[in-house]
Length: 445
Image (cartoon, rainbow, N blue to C red):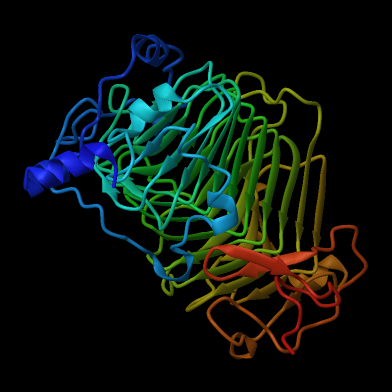
């Protein structure tokens, strides 16, 4: 047991011991300075709105626990081998058995390129990463839950200004009211999320203009609701590179599950479940650079409405409308499975609003929807057969489960985009045996 917790225990003050995990120390002077930089909004969807009765990161609150809050099979944030990489003798660690009660204080104490470890438990806190510091922040055990506080003028539970690389591994981040859980700020470096849960807010993550990179691996985003600005699960603004793999997106109500204005986009081996009938297309890509949407399983339970699994919209070389910094706009949509339940209406795998420089659509399975709705010709539908047999419709009763595994499927056409992995529920990927068949998975044996 750490010294602070031991002293509290000796005093018999259980309420004080609980507050040990609640305290959010004031940001350093340097963080307060960085907090005033580049806070321009991406557009109306990323405005600097406040969250009603949410309080800022400097506040304290009771009702915090240090018990093991877990989340099913994916609860373990780190393995023993990964935990060993954090030496709490030299790295600042947070929790009742460690010297730090505040995540922010541990972030402040960590050196550039260092690590912060967080013990399993519930922390009513938030934290800001300053621009001069690269860090790894990861669970020591279980899945530490950081929630219900907003830092840096109510911007998020986690606000990143780092111009280096920040890795967040094994945490749960939530409860930001109608604001964002994570804000990856303007002109920042790389933010890499691994095995994280992000939920219950107005937006999951906003990656703002000119940030270098956003990666999301083996994670879960859900329960966003912000009707006045659209509660996107992931909003990747004009990020230079976006990578999303092995992740589970669900329970969106009024925004895109993934909105990407990035220059290069790789959305691969994910599971998107439209179980609430969100009001927006599930994946929204602004056509710029090189884009790949490969090996995803997409299910819509919106039985009475039309659903577009994805759309390609304006951002190529269109003047003042978010001009693209590169001179190409290409997209590959391959080996995806899309099931639209209920009425087909004008549902489609793809809504092609503006022509790309090149578009490859192959080896997709589509159920209960068209392949492409061409928005430039007033709703002309392109059926799978119009694509030279490169994609196929598929009967709903042939899927083995909710994630759209199959035991038989049409043979794939030759492709330069064969996936080597496939999604594994709830937050992972696994090797794909082969790419001989269409759709998001190899045939189950």
